[in-house]
Image (cartoon, rainbow, N blue to C red; front, top):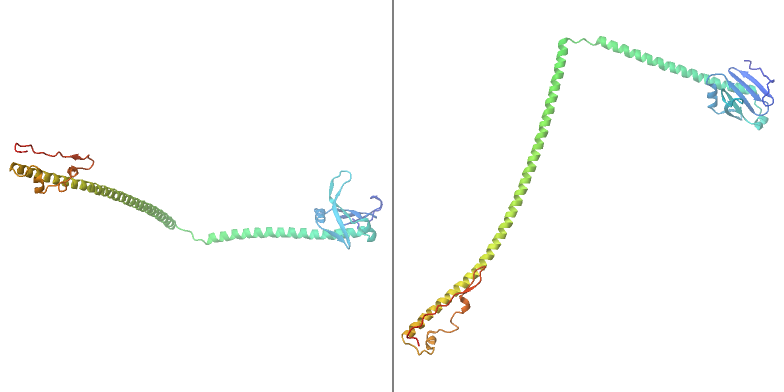
Amino acid sequence: HNADLVDRSKPFQGAALYACGKDVEVKKHSGMGCACITIHAEGGADFFLAQQHSIGDIVLQCKRHTDKASKEPVPNMVFAAWGRQAEKDSPVSERTLVEYVESVMARFAQMKKAAVDGAGKRETDKQTAALMRVLQSQEGQRRQPQMTVSQLAAIQAQEVEHAMRYQQLAQLQVQQYLEQQQQQQMQQYILQQHLLAQAAMQQRAVAQAEAMMQSQGYAAHAGGGAYAASAGHAGYAQRQHQHHEDHRDRRGGKGSGKGSDKHKSGYTAASAPSREATVTSKPDETPTEKPEVVPEATGTEA
């Protein structure tokens, strides 16, 4: 394209000014402060829209150009506007727009080249590193000495021995664990039996104490009854002796029969044991009174 070519014959909402450069075309309105920019480089329009643009003090507002007929956005066209008043105060020519867009596309081309070169270099580095690894592996295999059959057998025997030792160690650990469990269970059982024995001893001690208290109470009760019985028997024997004495005195003719014998012998109601002393009592039995023996009357008795 000719950068100096200006086609003023095509209408663009009034007068339109055209300018072309390398991979760039500009169609500018004569007084509206806007333009349509066509960028032929692949991806150039997207790169241009991704940035903010200004020419001097004029700030460009850019967006994707839409076709009026189809209402669809045009991939490689950009609509730029900066306003009527700004155009009136500081006109921006179509040539200036072409130069500015070409400078942006030059940066875009440099970035693409650097990206391609970098990707190529990275790929080359990857291939070189892979090749070096292969060469090193091959060199290591060549330097590694070949083992004989006896050496391989010795290595296998060592591996088997290590496996057997490991298995024995595992079995020993399991046996120790089981023994510890058995010891703990035995200790718990002994402690439980000891506690049970202590409880049984305490119960027997309590039972013995209760039995002793009951026996002491029974003995005290029985002792009181025996004392009462002995006192009754003593009184009975004394009365019997007095009766015999009185009977002998009467048979010998002594006394006047008026009770003087009793006074002489000292027999009085106070000295005679009471009738209640003859009553004996035993535990859990009703008291009984022994019958008093009275001697039979003789012919000499008045």
